[in-house]
Amino acid sequence: ILRDHPWSAARPLLLSLPGLVWDSHVVARVLKTHPPLQKAFLFFRLAASSPTPGAAFRHDRYTYTSMLHLLGEAGRVPAMLHLLAEMLRAGVDPDAATFTTVMHWLARAGDVDAAMRVWEEMRSRRGKCRPTLVSYTACVKILFDAGRAAEGRRVFEEMVAEGLRPSCTTYTVLIEHLADAGKFQATLQIMSDMQDAGVEPDKPLCNILVKKCASAGETSVMTFILQHMKEKGIVLRRPVFLEALEALKASGESPNLLWEVNPHLASEGMEYDPTFSHLSCITDRSTIIYLLASRNWSAIEQMVNELTTRNVKFESHILSDIIQASCANCRPSCGLTVLYYSLRVGSELDRSAYSCLLGQYIRNDSFDLVSKIVERLIKHGCNLGAYLLSVLILRLGSAGHSSYAAHIFGLSPADQNVITYTALMNAYFQAGEVDKALELFSQMITNEISASAGTYEVLIYGLQKAGRKQDSDRYRRERMEMQWHRQYRDKHSPEDSLCDHLFCGFHG
Image (cartoon, rainbow, N blue to C red; front, side, top):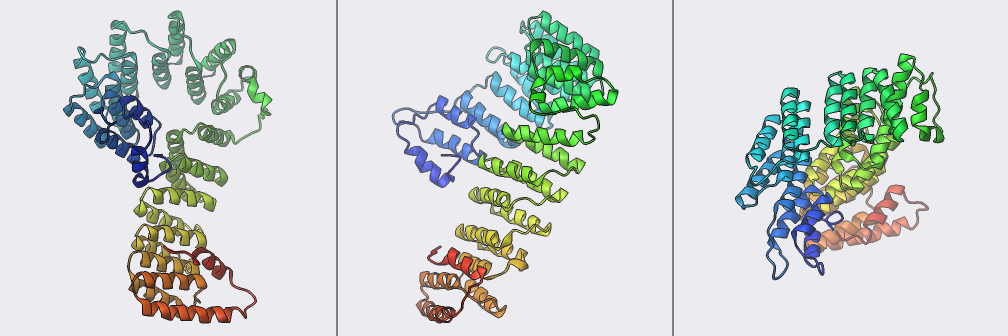
């Protein structure tokens, strides 16, 4: 319901669902499905104000933490902190998951000092809230990523002193830090230590380390990791495989072990071609396709931003697929990032991609953003066409935003024909701006654009609705005269036919 309906329609549907129990478990599970952020927050508020009859519902640490995560993930850090303060005022004690969530998103937003203040607050509540292994691991990663390695090592030592056994994720954080510092031999020692402790390196760790080795040209350590992967039956992801293949090619070493570790790629028809000189392009393409298949929208956004800085051009059909899929999954921000990238590198997308993205923002009531997107598209020479422009103008008019509709109409003089003129007239009538609609009709006639039956339909209905019967009757007579003349014409223009299709029988 939250994904497919605007909030005005979703709210009564939610309240009327038979058998729905408004409890912590249900509310937290709904929030964890990642509905659109605005509707997720409205649902969060609705849950507290509309409890199940006979049972009072109060948000607890699970529902608060779920909502804090959504706000942090969307980059709404001030809103996240405001909700945390509200949680404390309500007397709900945060647990380790709550503090870890806030700490993580503060660090991702670049405020490591604030993240560490949250860490100290959690440590000071040891009687009520004890840091978990996940909390320690997150803190160590934050400090390593911020270049504060000495503090990170102290936190790791504190974790061990507390009797917490490092997990594979914890070891991965340590190994990634050492690899970034160029200490590849030390990563092998950590891998040996973790195996002695009964923790086997998993697929993510091996892929990360092989990728780091390939980037640094450290093929000797890569060979050791590949041997371990061969013994344990672990394979590389295709993009990492391609990077490793490039590194081995550059160093003049044999790729045989790499192929032995990844026989599945040979079965897919991939062959080693030493003369291939555009491997980085294949790597980017493979990564994007993999992320699209796994619906990892945040990662796609980050990668597209990186492609933008490198000014790398990508196939337009893949970009169109990303936009349509991200909109279908209610993540239009990813689609918008891809759109801006396509404009920068000069890739024209399918009109269906533009329609999906604009439609998503219209449904979210983001009309100002819709206007800006269309403006950028037209300025970059993208041809939206009269049909798509007229549909946009119609949707904006139906929402009562005739000013945005007029702005879009004015952006593309080449598409100012009977279809777009009629769509804008309808928008003015929807907003109650009857005189503007009549002025626009006069302007259309002055510009020698003939009215169609659909145009008269909009005029007659709009004037009737405004109580201007005399004007309505006059245009009804004009329509009859126009139709009488048209019956002797063999063909009608495509614009007239489309306008009649859109507006004949259309009432707002």
